[in-house]
Image (cartoon, rainbow, N blue to C red; front, side):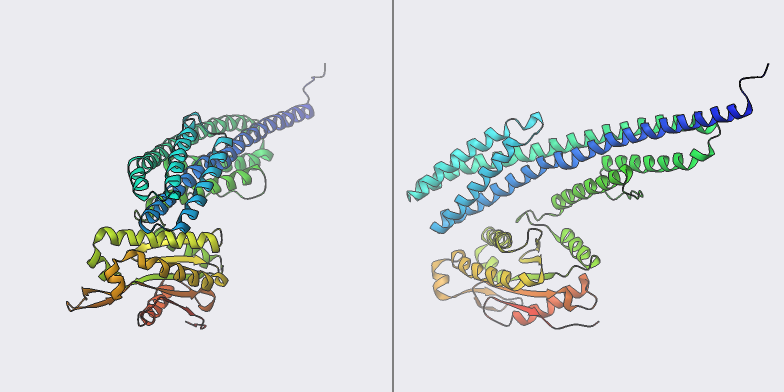
Length: 442
């Protein structure tokens, strides 16, 4: 009797087994990757909404704090209008906060913001009635402490949310491990059944899963620069791009938190240098505005550290507000340190921004001086050589370098160019800006 398992049928069953195991391996891998892709998309598109809301609320509260201080000092009705605008922005953020799907530990935040808004409304009403002493007392005893408490609450929520995100990344990493192990088991069975045809597919899946697994581990450990060598437009490629996007956002958040100047809350040298290097690498034309306060050392020596720090903070807020109103959405306002600042914007907006900044700064300067010094037009101090002399009131110098005018733009050439223009601007006894429009060939 002829055997049912002929050579042809054995080969056919063998290939059917290979195809079956290959389909099982690929199917399971794709399902797992699809699930991971969805989870990653939720992390990038969902979890970061909470970070964005926390950041926006905090920035708004700091802006309100700055405006309240100026308003109680200067008693200028225009500042009250700006404060009302900030309050309206906070109300809009509150609406987004209530509409967003957030973790349970955010449940008390909307009520905390509402209680602060009520106290802020009471303060503004008192100011509108020009009861300045009552307003100062109300700000000191109610509004300011409540705002500080709310900012602390935001910091706590941010830390807790970061911990939650890290925990979810670890869970995703474990699931990736499990998916990898099971996929490997199925493919090994296929290999044992002599599946040379499936070897290429298995190797490809293996490399992709390993790369995603390594990226998941690196992100969970806080390393956001791990390369993911996956190409293509399939699920692997999409998942790789989502991982890169998530890592970039996490890296930006970490860099901004670590590098931010504690006085102005503006990005520092690290973020500024990275943005410049990125713009140069991408060949994106940009304008570099180097902003320096003239005679600030004499001002600080004369009025002391506290008022000097307040002036630095006010100038930082002014630069941020002007850039937000008249600049691009992705323009960078940075604080190098001391009385030096940097703005990175597009070339066509450099001069309008410089003009508006100087205009607003010159209106701000009188409020920084005592009446007798303002009337005299100078203060007395000691220069770097130990000679006592009269120093003019604060002015601002803005040196503008256009990357498109540099043959080989770099951090070093831009720095040298700004230093050269700064020396020229310092010779003038007024706020001014200078744009280097010459084409420089290196």
